[in-house]
Image (tube, rainbow, N blue to C red; front, side, top):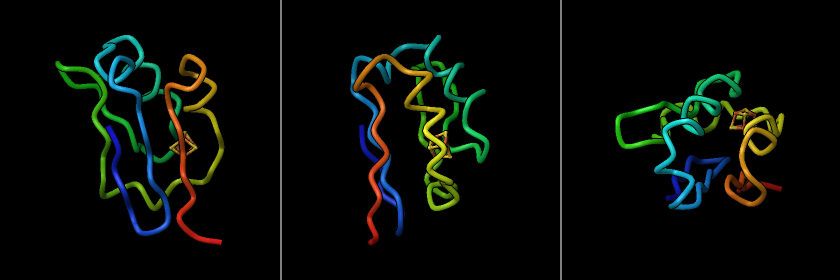
Length: 74
Ligand code: SF4
């Protein structure tokens, strides 16, 4: 799953996105509420994407490679 803002895109690997426990961890980790835990796993809150502060807490909370933050600006 990938969602694009203007400045930031977030990618969550499909198997990770379906993991309810990971969804809970990401929701706790992100200081600007870019992740939400839903019944089907991780949901990306698109309206908050550009608030990302590149803190990497979501990447650290997830299994290696499962979450990627992409900077869309230089
Ligand atoms: S890098 Fe930080 S602010 Fe950006 S989505 Fe991950 S936890 Fe949220």
